[in-house]
Image (cartoon, helix red, strand yellow):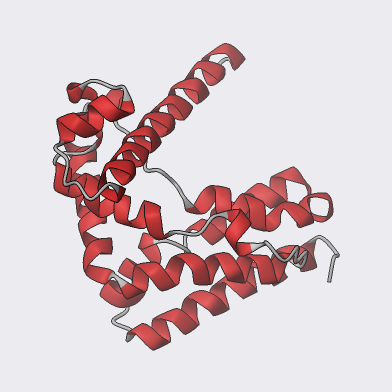
Length: 207
């Protein structure tokens, strides 16, 4: 793939993420007003077409389920307001902030996953909407103090590895595949997050 092609693909990916976030933001605003909007009303609020809205969400119920998490999930400002600089502590705060919500709302978590998979299967490959990836900006913020120590390639690898154990997949694997109770599942995800960060810093000679 040429540099130009990569730039175009990156632009399309970012546009899909922005569109999804615009729909979720519009849904959240309308819900905050005490309304139960239609998907068409959400599309109008987000300044996109109804057709576009249905490419991302098959129903208003699907959007509302995901908007629930949009409201509940913390921001970097919420998690790091005290200025903590230790990357391990910052990552563990992200793990708690996300996984506590997902493990505490397993039915909604599974509904969101089902809706995302259904939308993916129903779309042509070029139109498939990316998941919002809330964990990614949180992990980027958590690891920011380790940028110099790890370097860009190792930082990206660590971020991507952590993304596999923080988020909806962590619920599916620990609870549905491994059959763990919620307490043990949470111990496993915390342990894995700590192990990955320590390993990455050790390889970089930072610990």
